[in-house]
Length: 366
Image 1: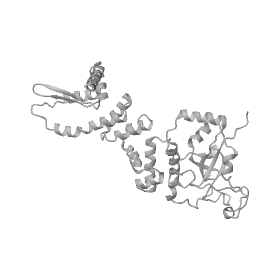
Image 2: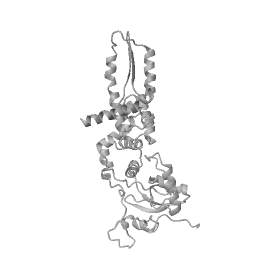
Image 3: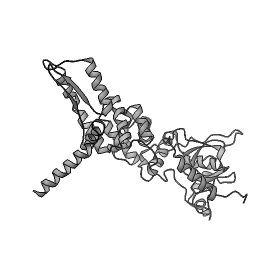
Image 4: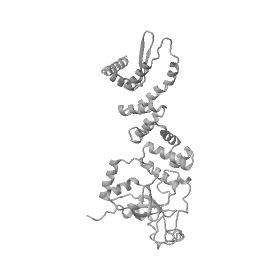
């Protein structure tokens, strides 16, 4: 029972070349077409596993990544033209500093820990060699974290040559294909890639296998207020809710509406209707700059309108004329009206709903 379980069978190891040893022939001999060794297998190219992205347009991997070892001999690093399989100590692997994913679901992580303890790590991580016996993760940080928590000392890995400017792209593509990035992480990764490659939205979309509108709309999420961004990153607000909130320019209004979305469970459609209603405010405000004759403008009434707006979570206006005044409460939909009535006049919402249903049935009978 004390024997450590190996997580990888012979199947994957037979498909990927093992790490080169000191007795390995020279690279020229390895690449010769006449090699007839029965152990020879196709070399895994650096672009393997990135099928959805058109990475052929990326700069080729440099052949200057090999460094002399400390004893003066040329150490055999991961081949720039391929990759090899190895079992590496966990302590020799460090996380990807440009990992776009920041949030790891704890429940899913614990499930993976349990699975690794029972059957071992079945899928190798992908790393690149950054020094003598030192490696950096390209793909598989969740597997790496779970393996550490499960108490493994070594894990299977594919050692691949990857340049710095392609490190973020590879990590981004893996997470996109697994749908494991939240919208804010995806937007931040897109923004970083635009800076790294100095390219347009069209070029970035082509490289990562996404449409240009999808890239542009995702990048717009970075314009949300910090409070709303935190809700999106935590998964409290969906990308659809976030895109609807982008039409609200005032950050305080964004925060207030985001609070309503969470508190009331508003649908994206309902939020869009509310935002559309809010969009008509500037014209109303312009007309209100010149108050009608006899209308009083009082700071106390403005404060009251603000408190009522917060109370009902919608726009409320309080106007006072020479002889009479009025209070205007705006609502975006029938659901919004029923919500306001629940606070303003409890019990009226169901009455209104019944009246509307009765009216619809009469129209049908006619």
